[in-house]
Image (cartoon, rainbow, N blue to C red; front, top):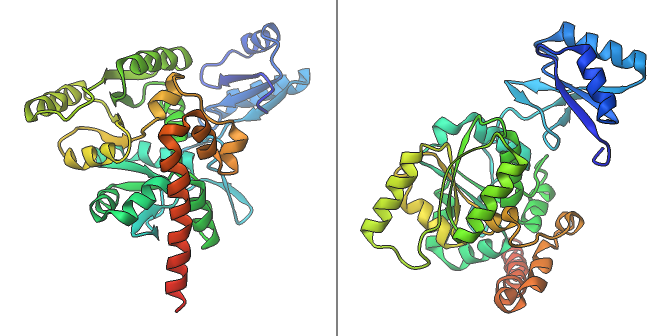
Length: 335
């Protein structure tokens, strides 16, 4: 339905005639009624009028004060359902314990546990960082100290599904950001951005405010591109905590951002999330791969062509290592 123009309305205090007039004036294709469970009579009235006029109309779903989004509904015993939380099981690759989820499921869980996650951090680990963890015990421990390390890599998610984990999918940092921005566009959770360049942060703020006018951005800061003194680091922590944001996005690049988050665990208020180039993607300073390339697991190739000199070692070499390590582990397992 991406090509259709949908009028989204709330059944709460809705005026049926105004909705119909707005529908025709805006030349919409469909109507989506939200808040129907708490305002059943009004929702039915809107739907009845729409039916009389031949307007295709849908009821949005709501559960636990969450407006159910696409990418989270699962068919269980012939019932459309949503996961109540991210499962506790972990899938281990190269010693890294990956959480198992889909993007919207992960966002729903985090939003429901912001208080408990405050002071903790979340990682998004792809093939490159999985190989780094295989070759560096300290970095592996950094990933495993997180509240959640999600599989930001199609091959990792594919291995999870192969093991029979229902609903296992790639949870890419930029996708997680997009879902989180959309789900908090009403200001229900606040954001702080730490990292990247000032140019990128300025562009990011402009893009987010244009796309999500109600989003609550508490602050943005671009630290110097060098090691910070203890005094500078303490000042950064004080600046972040003064903003009192629920979510603190960290865009320092791997492995620096993960190490930074571990070093500041229980020191920074809010849940920290290391999203690397996610700042640039959402700011528009780096173009992301088309969705079809993302779905088949070749986003890395698109980025490689964008910056081959810098990314050749990261992608081509580490991708080769990833599959060689997998083959070696499989061989050792069946000896």
